[in-house]
Length: 384
Image 1 (cartoon, rainbow, N blue to C red):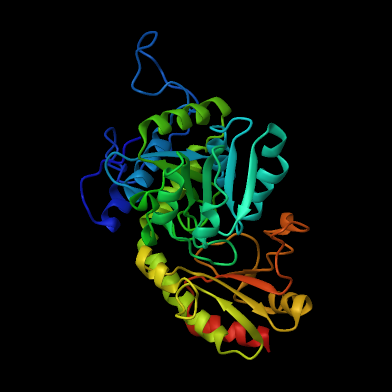
Image 2: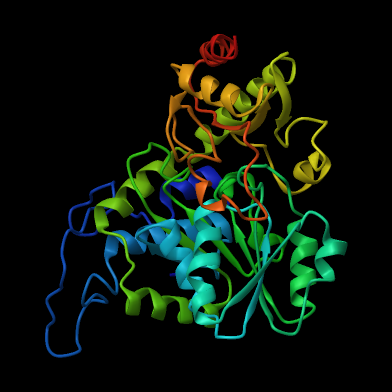
């Protein structure tokens, strides 16, 4: 659906885009239209809704809101049951023999989809470090249909130049797909930099409260949107209205949450950088990060994701994640509460034995919006 809300301010659009007061009751919050079907005046004559797998008013509100936040007027959003459902629906555009240039640092579930499912249907992929575009250019072939990346990446937090990667992909007629989950549209808008499709696991920062699972796609290309919408309906990978409502509720506070995540993230990264039991800190907001200047140029902040390598190897990393108390040991990210995990044994376990297997001492933090001093105190005692 078109994200055509007229006001320019991001905060205003997060609260109002697609979310006008209900015309029947005046309800300020978008109603949860908990219905499977809709009455028709006569055959083929209805109010825009026939069946909730195809359309639902609560889902429409979410789709219009994310379209407005990612690209403004002329942008289209589609909602899915999960982030992986959104990714899978993009790949229904591919055909046997097509090839995907895949960033060598992606979420383990994304890699698993390509490596263990899509290859069974004749869709090829190649892992490449997309932070080195000269190297990536040499991997493009006539069969390349998509260039696929996350930025910042998960969990190594590399930053990839979206504009230059888009130019590279378009030079051979390929589409650039950008997973914008870590940054959210508040910190980064890939469509403005040339991406063709933006993906979100709305489970993360958009929902923001660890209480919903949801996925989103956004594009400015109407033909592409229509194909993706057909897949959305035909495969039935759609979210329920309550889940859509939860994401809408979360988006209303996205700007203030992302500012708080970014502030705490930087302070945590600096603390870890100075700690004697930390070998290396990965955070785009640190001047020492190899793509710090690029991050400053294409992002408006650095977010709340911080990774680090613990001195002492695998056992030391496991001990750290076991000992925290404010940081909860759990998968996922992007909620108001701080989380800690061991990617190699948890979110990225599917990479074991692959060329991009996780470092055994890598720890990933999703830094929440708690009191900063409490977060630092917790990490101090866990490292100690």
